[in-house]
Length: 433
Image (cartoon, rainbow, N blue to C red):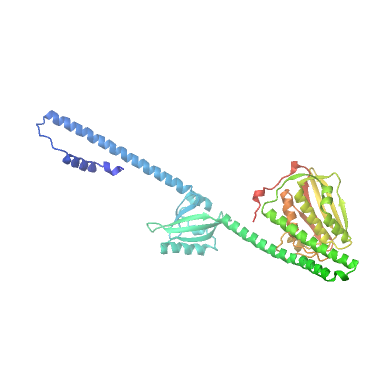
């Protein structure tokens, strides 16, 4: 491939002499003055042609260099990472647009300012040590620091630095890792919550299972000696243990499916009273066993626009909780009223043991230690309320609680009456395991 230097006049002269030397010599003849003038003219024209060609090549080289420089500047400025050149005193010698945006100031204003002024007090010693190592070791160094942007915003960044070839500056790459750290912390929290949940569930499963196994062993050993009343009593014990196990496993499966995004949201018109009465037989029977007066204050033709599966889970858990924490002879009222255009307020109110403010504050956190047993020793993980809260929020509303210790609780929420007023959060934004 021909290089630009091959067309330099001196190089061309040497090549021409060499080529002439290798050509066979012709017989000498007398050259007239006219021939000499003609030859001189031809040589002069050829020299000018070579000069023009050389000038054209030089211009092409300059354009190529300018284009390469332009592409380099474009790549430097619009790279997704921040690039900076820092002095030994941490002064910003140069930086790209991404770095200036991360620091929240114009590039012209940032030049020759000290970079460590943007580093938080907690991580400034880490940065100072990083810069010292870069200049002393001549090797690539890495550190994580927290930047203070616009006097109040914080930004977690990863810095990679190496000394420039001339040794006067430190070339630094700056990457924003704030979102990565937030997601990592969130994932760690979720994993911790999951481990705590499984610990709670395994503990709560052990009680009903032990009672179930113990009861079956007694029946197997003493069945031939038992009277009808004894068998009936043991049967009720088995039923209660099985019911507790079933509800716990049902909630666990719902929670797991919800976290993995397997439960689809499919709202439709639902006749509320009919749905509640048909799908909550277990809770209604449990209330009857405890001699609790269960009242439904819902118009027969009242409809809501909701996901039927989620509505069943919400009502089942709220009713079960009300029965669980209401003593024998108490009252539970399930009501639903149209409170405004296209809105229905549903309430589950009981005369149970109630809650103090501390319990209310930790009500939707199953990792707290405020979980209590029911009035008849019924177990509770708090998982059901978390499911209720999430399912209600899927409908665009919130679960609200009013309670006073010793006087009962009122759990209530709102649903749309038709599809025109239904606002639903995006499922894809839900964090899953």
